[in-house]
Image (tube, rainbow, N blue to C red; front, side):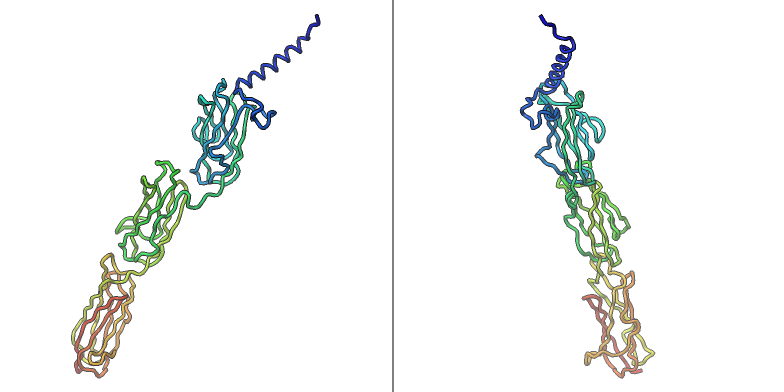
Length: 349
């Protein structure tokens, strides 16, 4: 009988053992894979839920990733790594995690995007057989500007009356966890607290995924840039504060009789009022004097038109200035769409 060389028997046993080891990893049929020469494709599959290949680079969007081996495999741990983003669901670091295979042979975890667009490579390996590996090519794409946070309502204008309350509402992404739904508001004008100068406010979005704050108008005309920030994503909106004109004008005269001479004068003082807040300081007030017999204007004003003070008053001085008129006359003060009038008597010097 011919004896087989001992070294040939050893090689044959080693080959058999290697085949048994890989088969024991998952028992997949070689013919069920695209490339039977690729150990990764023969013994491990890697897939993304829904077959997605892109993910918005917004820092919150995520994809479920599943690495699958044979349910009867003796190897129960899969290592998953990523070149970008954060892995969630296994144990380890943000980019390298171990995941235990379930009874169905699946190891599942999530990849959360970073905020930097670009290519991503996710790789899965059977922990004890690193040659058994598979990779996926994904892409973090530039996110929709309003995908994470958007303004739902913000008024375009508001009166600069120091009191008007403007409601500002934003909506946040449902992908944000409940612990990460606090929206930070800031403003360049106005205040988030009445009667003070509070330029920031934090509001947690409710079950409807919206957060609302109140911005109180300043007394100065101008624009406010309101910034809302959540999960490192920010959006901005503008509110223009316009002149707050009066709802009511009242008028006082220093005297109700004046002689027709340049030296004789009456001071007319208008007071501007609003039902909410105060009239914007610097609001123009125009004074006019007319004869009641003809309705014609006469005399001279000093300091006309005037502008309102911080207390809402404005004054001008009137003199008949030797106009030659004797009789009843009327002074009218006008601001915005409101006015007030008082009559007075012009007599001979």
